[in-house]
Image 1 (cartoon, rainbow, N blue to C red):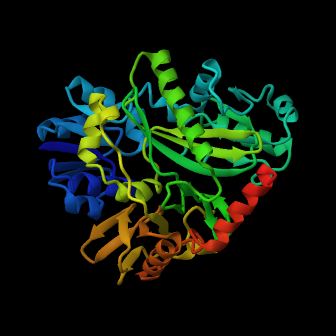
Image 2 (spheres, rainbow, N blue to C red):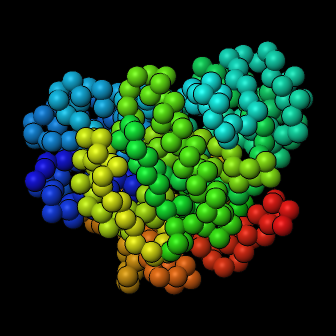
Amino acid sequence: MVRVLLVGNGAREHVIAESLSKSPNCQSLFSFMKANNPGITRVSKKVTVGKYSEIAQIVDFAVENKVDFAVVGPEDPLNEGVVDVLAKKGIAAVGPSKSLARLETSKSFTRDLLRKYQIKGNPDYQYFDSLQGIAEFIASLDGVVIKPDGLTGGKGVVVQGDHFTNTQEALAICEKYLAEYPRILVEEKLEGEEFSLQCLCDGKTVVATPAVQDHKRRFDGDTGPNTGGMGSYSYPDHLLPFISEGDLVEGLAITKSVAEAIFQETGELYKGVMYAGFMVTKKGLMLLEYNARFGDPEAMNILPLLKTDFVELCQAIIEGSLASLPVVFENYATVCKYVVPKGYGLPDDHPYNRYTSTKLTVGEVGPARLYYSSVDQKDDGIHFSSSRAIGVVGIAPEIEEAQRIAQNAVMAIGGEVAHRSDIGTPELIAKRIANMKKIRGA
C-alpha cells in the first residue's frame, strides 16, 4: 500500500488520479493543484492549491504527507525541476529530471540529439537567436514551420500557408518570438497525417501505448486557430486507420533510440512518459516533437483502457522493472471531445468573446466519462475559466459507438460553451484515410 503525490489539476491529471485511486495498492492520494479540480479532489485524501513554480511548497506537501512516490502531470513543474528536488528528499517520481525534460522544453536539444546519434525522423532544421540567416534558410526550403525554443502550451507552432505566406511575414513572427524566447527553430514543412505515440520508459525499457490522433484546430473541419487540443480518438486495434503496423513499430524504435541517446548524452535514466508526435509523410515517418509527460487530451484515450494496475506500472517505471511487467490495454475505441468556452483560442475581438457567463450545467451524460480541466467548484456549481473545461470520453467496442456516446454527453452540458462535433466521425476519419493514400501515392 502506497501514498502517492499527484502534481497537476487538468483533465489529464483527473484521469491519472482516477487510475491511481482505483488501484488496490493505493492507500492514499495527495494532490497539489494550481486550481481546485473537483474530480481530483473527490478521489484525493488531501489537496492543496499553489503555484507550480513554488517547488518548495510542493516538496513540503509531499514530505508532510509521507508520500512514497510522485506522478507529475504537466510540463511546467518538470521544467521547474520538481523531480530533482523531490529526489533530494528521497521521493522518486514518474517524470524526468529538469535536464531530461529538455526533450520537451528545448526543441533544439531534441533535434540536435537526433542528429548527433543519427536517429531517423529529423526534418531539415536550423535554430536562430537573431534574425540573421533566417531569410536565407527559408529560401532554401519549399515551406517552413517556425517554433519557439521553449514551452508554448501546444500553441506556439506557426506553419507557412496557414499562418503566414511570405518571408517578410515569417521574419515578423520570428522577431516576435525572439523577444520572448532565447531562440527559435525553423524547420522544413512536412505534409502528411499526424498521430501521437505515448510511450512508458524506465530508462532502459520503452513500452508503447495505443496510438491516438489529436485535433488542434478550434473548429470543425480542421479550421480556425490552433489550440491545446479540442479532442482525440483511438481505435480498438490500437492502430489508426491511416497508419500501418510498420509505422507504429518504427515510431517505437525511434523512441527507444532516443531513450538510449538521452542516457548516453546525460548519464541519467529517463523515467516517465516519452510522448512523440509523429507525422507519416511521403519521405517516411518524421518526428514533430517530444513531450515529457502524458498528452492532454490523449491521456484520456489510453488510461481508461489500461488493464495493468497503474500503481504497479508507476513503481515499475521508478524501479526500472518495466521489462518484467505485462502492460495491457483493452481493445476498445475511444473518442474524447473537449467542452470549451465559446471564445477559447480565439482573438479577443472575436464575437464569441462577448459571452461572460462561466457557469456550467451537466445533465444526463449516459455512459460517457467526464474529466474536469480548468474548472472550479463554487457554492452555486461548476464554473470554467478561459481554458478548456471538461474532457468528455466515449468508450465502446467500435469507433462509431464511442463517438455517439461522447457527442450525446457533450450535448447534455450547458452554458456558454462549444466543442468540435466532427471528432471521431466517419466523415473526418475518411478524409484522413484519403489524404494518407494520396501522400503514400496509393
